[in-house]
Amino acid sequence: MRGGRRTLLVLAAAALTLASCAEPGDIDAGDGDEPTSPPVAVHPDDDGAAPSPSDGASVSPDLMPDPIQEAEEMVAERLSSWQDYAVLSETELQLAFYTGNPACYGVRSVVAENDREVRVATISGTLLDATDSACTQEARSVSVVVELDQPLGDREVLPLTEVELNR
Image (cartoon, rainbow, N blue to C red; front, side, top):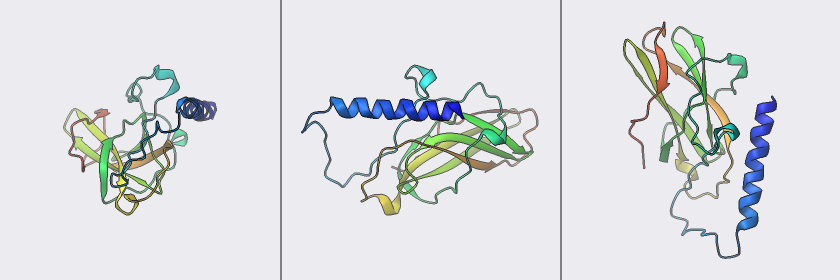
């Protein structure tokens, strides 16, 4: 699990660096009426680029984080690019991505299929009962399991980038 520790160390170092650069009065606490959003996690090998799926190859389910339950209702949603996926069965995929603290942030997925490809969006958002809470900005590696309408077969698994988000 060297990669997981490396990611955690890089994220911790980045947070400490940012915190040490701030001066009193530089941080806007807001008026408390706006929900916070989950942190954007960047893989250390991506040179600051936004996370994106690997090369479209499936990984072993043993390398995936434990799946979490999808949230029914969220606000301030945003796309969370999945990094890897595992084929669990002919009609089930497990996708790994980053989101925030599960006490404040939920996730959901959207699947669009056709004869050639399966497109999946993973979405993070603020839970309705956490909109007035002080939520910590931490990245958590999570996964969700999605059901396909038809067996995957030789269809390609790709990100779905155009999806309606709850604001």
